[in-house]
Image (cartoon, rainbow over all chains, first blue to last red; front, side, top):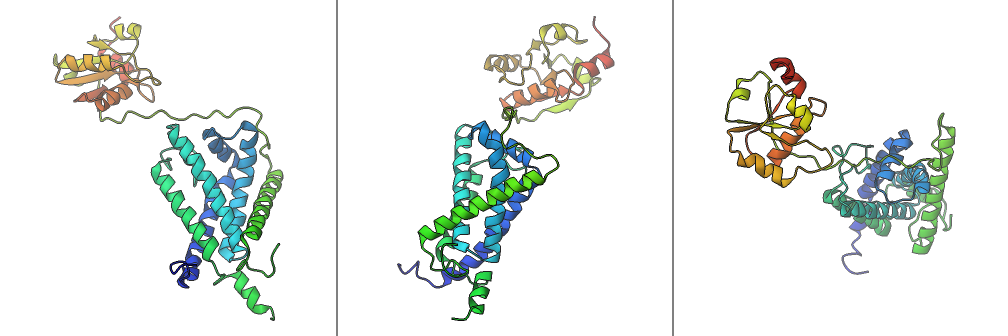
Length: 159
Length: 169
């Protein structure tokens, strides 16, 4: 590791990032789980997935967000959970870029269903997702299970 | 899980990727299971294409409403523009100077915008269908957006104007 990446503070910086991302992904999933049909319409509006996969994505993606978000919040299997979050963000980013390139004036569908005026896609949305992707990458690389269930379990297990 | 211990500290990237796949599969399985418990489950596969309506960019110019009995309507310096089709425009109690039928899906042709500007009136007043949304307000906003100044629309459109002024037929 270089000097910048070997800094011991990274592990502590990863703690609030992990908690923030965990809460964020659970929050983002709430409206999708509450109304999967509306979220399916959001997914369809991007016009990327074939029709056969739209409902399947609308049913499964929110729960993947919840499981990964919960693991980040409690701090268990953090690196895999951060990779899941990073993977989801990469997919969301690709969808956003395609929609923007097509000039679609539409809702992001990230935190509410329908209504381009409430959460419209824009280059700001892309930057926001890039920031979250960087956070997820940081957590995946630097998390050392501080303030986590994993740490409690490790301390409780005799050597 | 593929590594020893409860945490992922020191876990190889390959192991982490395998566990990430497991998490994604588990989350997806939970999602499908929860859907089955709903009173009206969403079918895994949509039967019909979704009716996705992506709104067109809206004209964003400023246009003010004007009451149908406002004296400015009779001012010869007011340029009356009808957003209705030719037949409906002929039935208006005040004859419009220009007829530009408004189409929600098409931009107003630049030639029509230039025609409005070329009249050189003090104000432009657009009469629409009075519906929600009102074609007159939409045309007025689009004209303002395209650079025409002092644009107004008749509040309530043609029905309100006819009620206030009487039918010309």
